[in-house]
Amino acid sequence: MVCNVLVSTESMSHPDWLRWRNEGIGGSNASVVCGMNKYKSPVELWMEKTGMIEPKEAGEAAYWGTMLEPLVRDEFSKVTGLVVETRKAILQHPKHPFMLANLDGIVHDPIHGECVFEAKTSSAFRKDEWEFGIPDEYFLQVLHYMAVTGFNGAYIAVLIGGNQFKWKFIARDQELIDMIIKLEKSFWDHVRDNTPPPLDGTEASADLLSRLYPDSIPQSQITLPNEALRLIQHYEEYHEKEKLLVEEKELVTNQLKDMLKGNETGIIGNRVVTWKSIQSERLNTKKLKEEMPDIHEKYVSVSSYRRFTIK
Image 1: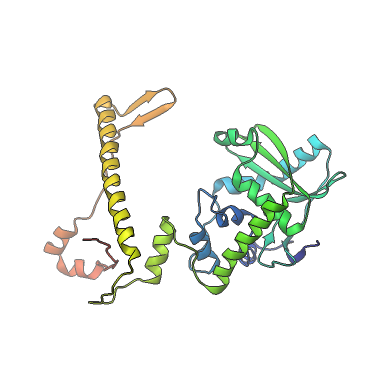
Image 2 (image 1 turned 120 degrees about the vertical axis):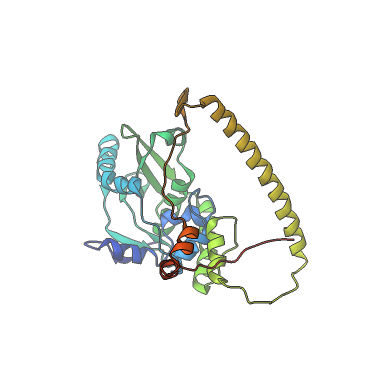
């Protein structure tokens, strides 16, 4: 299988690169689509791909990962003796055009042929995840790249904590790749048809519902389906558990505060507990309205939201 070159990234601006990347599912999206990403839900990704929200800007860690990519690539070649070719292009699966790949490089392996190369930098706090394997989101990422390119393997090299270098080889697993293709095709059908994927308990799902149904129709009423009784029961059970957890959290908080007493900081092992005095200024809107109603009316803004209750 030979993949397509969707577009060259040579001299491409970062905004244009983001726009092209949003035309399909990239490697970093694979774990999100598969429901195995701790930081983003499928609903949030769907909102990005359909233009409902702007993708979040990459943080400082991603910036330094990009800056250190050539260093990681060079160290990999130095350690393994394998040549890594950079390919400045967004690649596209020949049968599933929504599947895209922006590779860090291609390894010319005399045994396995052409392989994906992926460079990573990692915090020292995640070093245990690299001890005997690689984090799930990166494993799914390189499987996605193998799906797009048809390559038989992938090399992933990582600089951990700025001073520990590791590399791993991942062989092609066609069964897992077929599962990823199936999940990504299902997700892209939702994008293409502009229908959201199944809702979950994330903030993104709540945001989506608020965007879809921002205002209630006054005095309107419907009869809910029978399934609503089960959901209401669950809601009440979770609400009671939440109250108990809040009380338990406040109990241990108060016990720690009592240990600190008037001190600002307490230390135990490598943990630090602080109870610090903070000063903040707040506008007394009630007093402003009473004493300067004209100014209050001039600057006050009205916002609306839908309040959810169960009786």
